[in-house]
Image 1 (cartoon, helix red, strand yellow):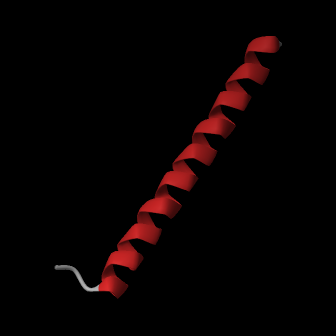
Image 2: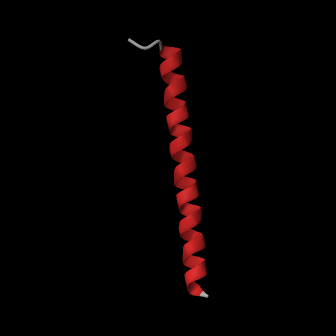
Image 3: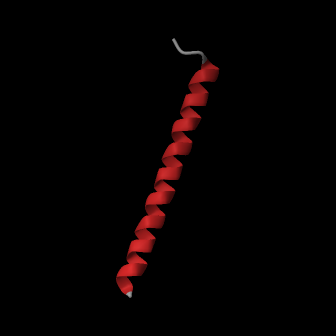
Length: 38
């Protein structure tokens, strides 16, 4: 059984990583769309 503090630390790290990846993916997608329009 994992201690609760450690579990929440791991959980928040995963959440932050996921959020960053989604943001980067969205930015890349927007940049790709803009470059295709030119």
